[in-house]
Length: 147
Image 1 (cartoon, rainbow, N blue to C red):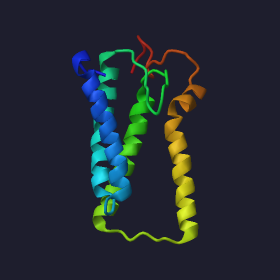
Image 2: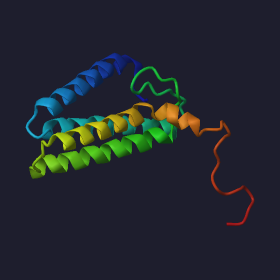
Image 3: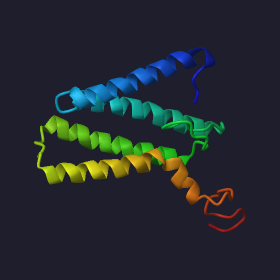
């Protein structure tokens, strides 16, 4: 993803440390704002790396959420854009001081929604292959046709 080989180990360690710090900050931070800011920075870096890889034409697999061998594609950009939007909304709520209700039913519904959303994000590659017929993708226009 454009990281020079001599820096790859350092970048890998920095990513793991950053992800762990984001989790701790989200869990312990007041309102989660510091963790959301770090999450936004990490997602922006990941998305930039994916876009650069796609634009360069380099074939790379996405090891997102484990050892996936699925090639990096537009669905990864879409997934990260959705996650970025969620983090922005979360940060806005945290900065606004939106009170959180702790009613049991609301907590259970939110937890279930978060679980379903997390599973959809984690299995993006597998879900994408369900709809991929293996045919090469082309633009909507056929060469030589009138606009």
